[in-house]
Image (cartoon, rainbow, N blue to C red):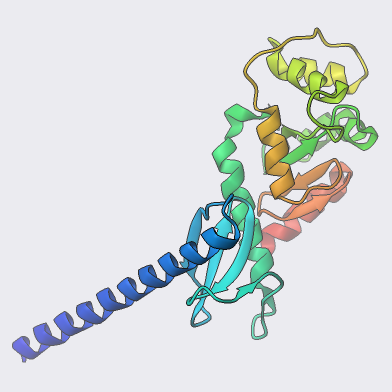
Length: 242
């Protein structure tokens, strides 16, 4: 009986290894297929899903689904009819968070809440009216337990006055004070240094941002536009329960 048990375990291990090898082969096939049609983008992750023969592909914060033979690409909502979960949106949220992790808080301007309950990441334009309104209530967000992490997204593009202001804020000795001054329309000393502003913009483009502020909740959900502090706190609490 012991010998039979050992043989059964060995057979199961062979099957598992074979399954892993098959998954690896399909992932390689998908990467090769995507390299032909999207040569400028390299997938950061290719993983099997619960749907047989369907793989989740991440390219930074973007997600898509591709069949294991590398032939069919699905770019749209996939819903689990049993649980009613939008699998695509869940995957997008997780991909956004992983992309933000690659930036890290050292690459952001952060306003911490003293008694932090939630953290949001906001793509901001210093000259955007609603971005200024949001920052004008930064103390109210903190009172709700919401820490705010800023990434720069000057909508007028590279080398525009808004872009230059973002660079100057980043290069200031006190980034938080410089951000607050700039949002209040107070001129910030013009400075240049190594900065992440353009990388922030590129990440925003990949996330599909079209306007500012754009808020990423701590579950990865994207919320476009300004949201007042108490409403944002309620939204964060609701998302944490889902």
